[in-house]
Amino acid sequence: MTEFSAPADSDASTAVPGPVSPPEAGNDEVPRAAVVDLLAVLAYGELTAFERLAEDARMAPTLVGRATLAQMAGTEIAHFRLLADRLTELGAEPNSAMAPFIPALEAFHATTAPSTWLEGLVKAYVGDGMAADFYREVAEFVDLRTRELISVVLADSGSAAFAVREVRAAIAEQPALAGRLALWGRRLVGEAISQTQHVLAENDALTELLMNGTGGLTGVAAMITRITDKHSERMHELGLDG
Amino acid sequence: MTEFSAPADSDASTAVPGPVSPPEAGNDEVPRAAVVDLLAVLAYGELTAFERLAEDARMAPTLVGRATLAQMAGTEIAHFRLLADRLTELGAEPNSAMAPFIPALEAFHATTAPSTWLEGLVKAYVGDGMAADFYREVAEFVDLRTRELISVVLADSGSAAFAVREVRAAIAEQPALAGRLALWGRRLVGEAISQTQHVLAENDALTELLMNGTGGLTGVAAMITRITDKHSERMHELGLDG
Image (cartoon, rainbow over all chains, first blue to last red; front, side, top):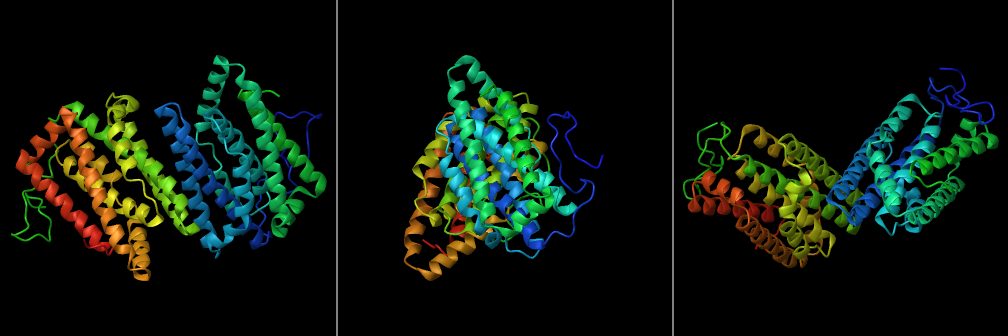
């Protein structure tokens, strides 16, 4: 529990500044509007993740795969419920709170609709991982209760191991798949960053939260570096190095 | 807690024989194969119910409707997990156990794919209700632990009230809808009975369970009467009297 939250395995050359406020203390000074927007975009993200996983489950080559993705979808919708309930507690109407974020999330899914079972798995694994990294960073800037809720809804459901196993097995059998899936992974990260920028461009409360939390543009840049580094680790995990 | 499980509101003219074994005692003599098949068909039913609800959610005219159906789907897949775990405990491999029931359930959904949001709601409400009535009856014939599990997975998630409210509101606004939806309800019950017959025709263990439990053909007929009576009550609830 040092004052700076650099990852334990970082060394001097890769260390980037962590969040400005120490992680043990929540920030109760954050405007309610920012917290509501944060929970709302996360909630709509869970709802669309549910829909995407439920749809991708239909491409599963086996009943095990179909049931596994369906259960991942079930976890997302349970998390949606927690977030919607918290929005209600905060006096916000969940559906109106989510409305401003519909276009960006729909655009993300429309431009990254998987055309194969493996693309669906890669999206589930790296897409969810990237979103989780982002929200976990932002959660450091808000009150403790919100942070704890975000940590619950972003906990890995254990299905990541399934995705990694399936993708690695498929590549081992058919190495030519790796190139196409690696490109797919790059497209996912590109679209995610692009849609996040759209959301921030239209949402002052979230932009301010991010700027204040990271300590300004340099901090935001460092955060993006951390997130893309972790994305690369996940691609490596899948056997999909650039 | 009387010895006979006639519904509290029945009178002499409508009373039909209840299950042969008193509901307080479980029947531990039922062959394991019958219990495995019962849990397996129920599990595959939950998986397809998940898929159907997730797909129908996309027809929702509002974000509330979309999220509500998505959450109903989430409940089904959580129940699927409980049933699959119990199958594993009983030494059965869930996917192989479910395999024989795939054709009948796929045929049911293929012949009853809703073409509108309201048809989807009616199917969710009367379809799930009918399935629940059937499985609850059959659960009376097996061991206590299986019966309790079935009772958990068939518990109304509270979403029935949502379906009833939406359908009634739509009919109040556009009374011409009622005729078509009433026909739809009849088609659902017809297809459900037809597919149940297919399952039983090919599954001796389940057929025997049903015959022994109800006390023979007359008992089965009485059970079908109880289930179709409850179906009529649900249609009435929706404002869809024949």
